[in-house]
Length: 266
Ligand code: T3D
Image: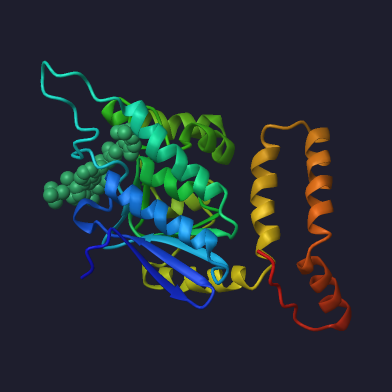
């Protein structure tokens, strides 16, 4: 058993990162944040990686912030309170920004409970696959906090305000099947096939023009803030750039020659 808090395993063009604090349902400590950040930076810099899968060791995906971590655990009476804003600034905000700027598609393979920042970690990924026994909990309200790790931005955009408010205020456990039904995640699959389905999906994405896929993420997210005219302008600018890329030439050449394309841009 490795001591690493984030395990990395490469399978051809697919890198799987596994959060590895199973005894605490892979909840985040400062050290796990640091290791995840380093692994994501390394993946972003590695041209061999064309798709990333994030998952958890043991029976959970990630239970959010480790509430026992001295960095956030409430101070004893008489001592100044912890500054949670600081944890968000130095750990969670950079994590979301890192995920959103990955040059390759990112899949969350949610193998068990995803709570608090762990739920929103998954929802920040490009495609979320979850095992039948997985669940999603916006646990923040139960401990007197607001959804973070992008939750306030993501939830209403993914499932609409009414469901966002219900999930965030009640903090109930949402099953993977229900999460798929309401459009919170891409797909719920049998637990037994989750890893295999994630691998197949990752290999499929890795063979696609990943630079265009990363640009698609950026364009769809950015469009949430834009008017239709602004989104049309942005699409034109991104398309102009992609139109000069190898992958576009290759895609069209392969189509014309009725052969499979070989995409290499990143
Ligand atoms: O900087 C800041 O603090 C602000 C940032 C906040 C971001 C956040 O993520 S806030 C939300 C933090 N997360 C939670 O509030 C979730 C807390 N966990 C739970 O509610 C439950 O554990 C679950 C619903 C996720 C799972 O329940 P269950 O019954 O399947 O498992 P369990 O028995 O509760 O947990 C198993 C073990 O994991 C247990 O340890 P033990 O007793 O066996 O030694 C439990 O204490 C530990 N664990 C679970 N979640 C956390 C945790 N330990 C530390 N921190 C956790 N978040």
